[in-house]
Image 1 (tube, rainbow, N blue to C red):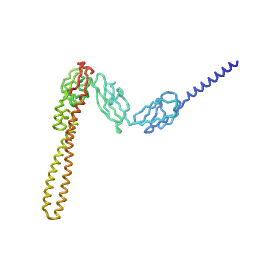
Image 2: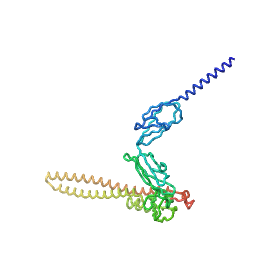
Image 3: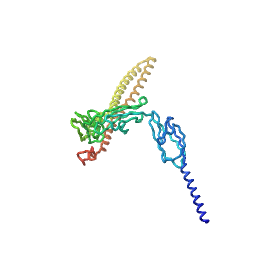
Image 4: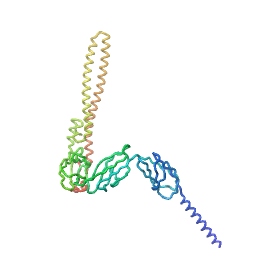
Length: 380
């Protein structure tokens, strides 16, 4: 009997402990302090409106993850997920909202994929899609139709972009592969992209294709697109002669770079080298002129017996000598720049080709290549 009573008391005590533990777990509360910049942003907690910032909210923790969305007119909405910790009761959530706008894109026919700066936004009809302020490249893609490219901008004065586009059926496609990688591709003088490009939409008719890259001979051809198919080109650009580039740079700074197609470096070296050389020659002419003036005044000073006139001649001699000294300094500086530019432009040619030696491509890895297993590389 005694053991039975003790057993009943133990069961009652255990049930009370379990009930207390369940109440403790079920009544776990957390405190949220939600702020934003700017204030008065609407806060949605798990898609239910909680209020407007700043918010101090105490709630019972029922979900393991909370989803909060900041929303304010004229700003891009932001979403934050919170996973509360059992050891922490207070949470401060802050979000700085960025200015934004809305875009609406419709197409004929509908269903086109919409990309802004290569970021997928959705399919048409696209309505009330939020986007940050800025300038965007718009791309519309729909199977069986030409890829359409355009641009638009969202700023403080124009927050809403709305436009309807009519997509044209595909006519032909262009694929260009080959060597070297990242060569520039131009179709009818319009930039198409970097090598390789695949299945780019083109219209029927005559086209000129140009592939260029600094340090390589250009590739130029023409073709007539008359059928609804993919026109494929396998292009190999051949490196320009390094010895010719070095010889040109020895003769004239920047000439080798211009020969290789590196116009920016060529212009810099040409301006620095030739400009400083011309400046040095002009400063040297000034020195000769001032030197002649100095000796003329010196001779006049030696034969003159008038103290006042002698003092004037002496001051004039000192001034002329000072000008000579300044021009000597400028001449030395100009010629130093000339020599430096000449040497650096030759070194630049060397390192330019040194970088080209690291270019290699295996066309067998390219999609649609007709010569598998052929490895192409630059040997200089």
